[in-house]
Length: 330
Image (cartoon, rainbow, N blue to C red):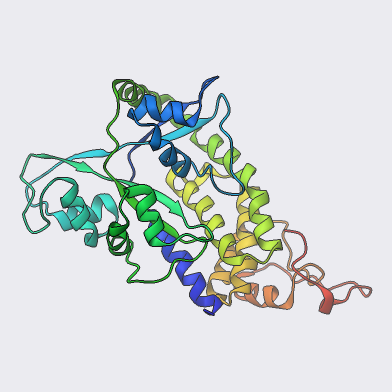
């Protein structure tokens, strides 16, 4: 069995894999829509329903049904005009998140990574589909499901830097997709979505806050169930969403809850430095927070000591028993 610190490292590594830019547009679900009908109208291929499911995490936490008014992300490839001095490794690092992904990038453009792209040419940028590994998944199964070829498992292994490592539940795998040709209707929706981004920008913070508010109970459930690696993954995805939309995207109470749960998870996994940093963020986000032994275990208070600054440690009441104190309320 791997040590908790190794599991934590793998979870954080998975988060770094999702930082590369993606090309997609938003579709507003209408009455009578199904995922199959949307896939057929956007791509002309019903089987791309599975891409919509994965891109919108509709298969996680027991599954989610689409309803009218829901906004779906519709994956699409991007395009980049080559400039003088560009190479496939440099383009792969800039657009796909790693120089080692140059093999896939070049192949998507019907060439080889050792042949330089032509100055002024337009190249196709694959869409990085984020796949969260579920129980029973392996790299061969994922390759067959999304690329239609079990033999391309090695491509995903190399693309994600796995080096043959066995996948674990909660890992994040990026699947580079290029077979995402849009129909005329799909292109029309993509254009409308691009035009709407300007007016939607002002509402980004509100959407981020609402989205996180819906997901916070799942984060609390991870902590209460002892699923600390899952909690780290989920909480950092919340914070990544905030960083993409700007520092003010999430409310201070939301940040306080997220960092409080990260404190708990990091402390349980033995990542003391990260626990201390999370405690500092928690105390900064919640001025009324106190290091109270009635609600915080000695391990959590110890992790918070370097971060507390002027925050007092509240002495327990005579009737309380610090030995029995757990994590307490979030």
